[in-house]
Figure 1 (cartoon, one colour):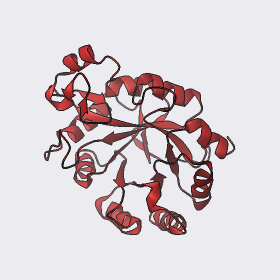
Figure 2 (cartoon, helix red, strand yellow):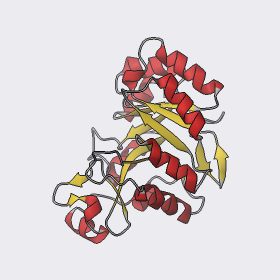
Figure 3 (cartoon, one colour):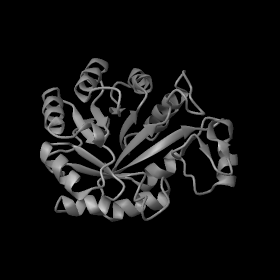
Length: 251
């Protein structure tokens, strides 16, 4: 689902392509990942949207970077936004990326797993993300995801209308993960491509759609895999190579 105009709207509506192609950290094989440049390039190539990673700063800012720590900065959550911008001007804020991707879907992944250098059991980052998106009004189309179920549960507690996706990898059966999504009120399952082998993709997509959920699979770069998963009925393909994915889908 997407958040647009203050109401729910399907990610893949009848006038939109399916599956959607979401650029993983932007067109990261052709531009530095998680930068405005990479996101803009992906959209110019025709991607339907982008996926990004967000961390909090010490003073309540939100920056887009994969790891909790960054070269020349250290742990992002221990530094002010001004410090980070001075040391690494290539690291954008969430607002800057949303501005650059206006009109396209943005999958905001909140990084907050136990063991992360900036792990926060209070889920302050979730609160900051919800506040930041709502402060922008209804100008953005977003989906908030996390590997940490508690984090997206917190997002829903703060704003039940904000679409959320549960990221999964090994350790949970994808069919069981769909039940978790339903029980916790989340809108989408985001399984690793390694969880959807053989006939599992068909089973997961069929069950998800029965439950009214969407399946956005990551990270899929192989042309044959993209076509196989599209045929199985996935709703979104998160990929490092959006141009390749678009070509594989005949777009």
